[in-house]
Image (cartoon, rainbow, N blue to C red; front, side, top):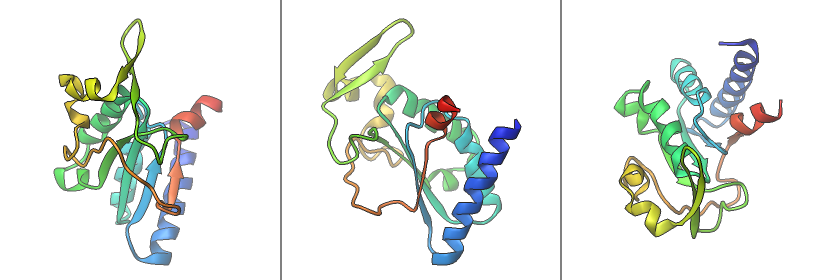
Length: 158
């Protein structure tokens, strides 16, 4: 693990621990623009090791990247711990509205596909409601989350 990732991990785990010890209830974490993120497995394992109760919601505008981000967690967590993870198709401008059309990323092209078609594609069965805690629409009230992270966008700007 490089120094940048290690520093960010320590900082975020520290913040989550503060909130957990202050409130004594599970810390609700939103990961904005999850992407094919390798940070979340590190974060989840650290929080579990520190015995911090949490829930982690992965969000992305692309179902392709949500699947990859969730799979990275699925590969390293037990089924019991994986229950703390859920996914939603959203982006920062769309946390309160249902998606109508979704970007699908293929090797050489990007297509915009109606949501109903996305949910019919076998590779995105993962995104169907009630599958592994995944939802296609979620309404979030103000203060729905205790911690907001965005390692993919942050890393892209750094």
